[in-house]
Image (cartoon, rainbow, N blue to C red; front, side):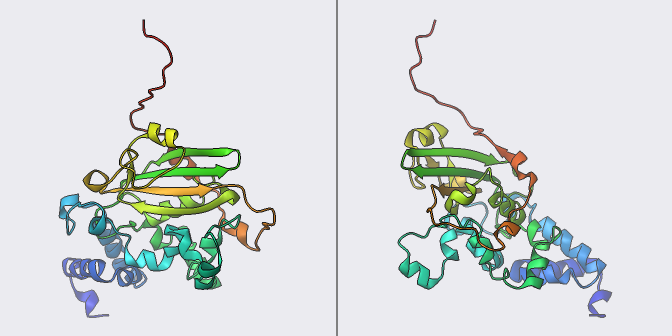
Length: 281
């Protein structure tokens, strides 16, 4: 390590940039070595997430290979991208529906590091490195996030919508984590499931209101392809919970007070309301 630190910054940056492309965990860990490497690694991560889209390998192509959650984040937080992944193999075989049914924080409590107290403390530090990592690190960032909420009840169905205000470098793991713990973005204890759908963007709020449900592949409702290359939809489903639902020990410790509510905006696109309301003068 002494020989490594004798290298000029230009060479160290080149080494760290290679780590960013090949082994992100090692790059993050290198920040613990000393202040010099911490500063250089921090700059490499920031620069990697603020490049023009054309400089990313593969450009800005949408869907498929163009938009992918980084494998490191998927291995550490996979249960948060699709709540179906938080259920065990046995539960998937026996449950009729993979619904949280009132146990809203189950995906958080089943994260691979959640049961180790020391790891949990490290991950939940406000300054933890993972919070600043782009969900699609190494690829064009997600710069547009729609939150589509669908509630089903015997009295009828309803939908709601928010757009998350994403500052550069786009959707980071920390922002996504905070959105999931924001009661405005979910249904709290009445949340049944959620899924992050990459390469999709809501095309029409009016069609969503007319459908009273969300259909990810409906071309009248959702954009895909190039126009949604850097977009994603967080699809949240909810409904009344079973009468036997009870609180789980430690559940409330995952629910935090967040300022993320201030970044949840109403529909920002055009409104095309075709309901007849009277004649024009």
